[in-house]
Length: 295
Image (cartoon, rainbow, N blue to C red):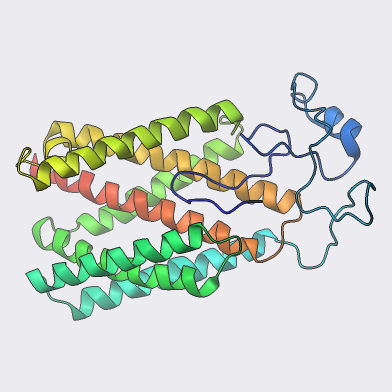
């Protein structure tokens, strides 16, 4: 299974072959059992793919059918929860320390920018590695926490309580997305992932162009990221994209556990969740500021 950019793609194992590019067969019970248990399998043209297989199955000899992985050393939900708690906890500690020790000033803003750049570089290095590196992931979380702490303090100085409201908003979006996903109202299929990723890439491309316009003075008021109604609409779209990324994260975790992914893959699950939650928090912070400014 290849490494991926946690912003624009997710690893997946797709028990029903519904995830784009990951046509894997059911782990237990064979094709017949998977067909009986999955009402969508019979209508899936990829369900009988002779090359589909569990990426974590062990091949005992050349030409022999893949065997299910051993039960030891496999990723569990407890592993994912523990690694996610460690990663998000590192972000929180970094943010608290930065908030407490760095006063609001141009210098602290520069420090936040530097921390944000380092966090981005560490995230990209991990994204293109074939194996998870806890040191890189926790390093990313620490620098991301410093960035968020300074930014949150600056927002709080102008819009009192904005960070707290943003945290609550992030929790609400995450909880609602998990509820909708577990209820089966959203199915992460190839078409769903393809459309969502296309929209996400287009959104980021437009935001990059908007940033260049702001830097070169063509959009002095922030353009699409202004503090007016247009900025609010863009912020809502960004939060919806964050919810979309969360569904991909949930699918990655669910399929990784079902297919017996190695335990270290829990770090990648935590990494993806952390990046997505940071995305949602930053956009929620901006949205709270916009609505507070227009009161």
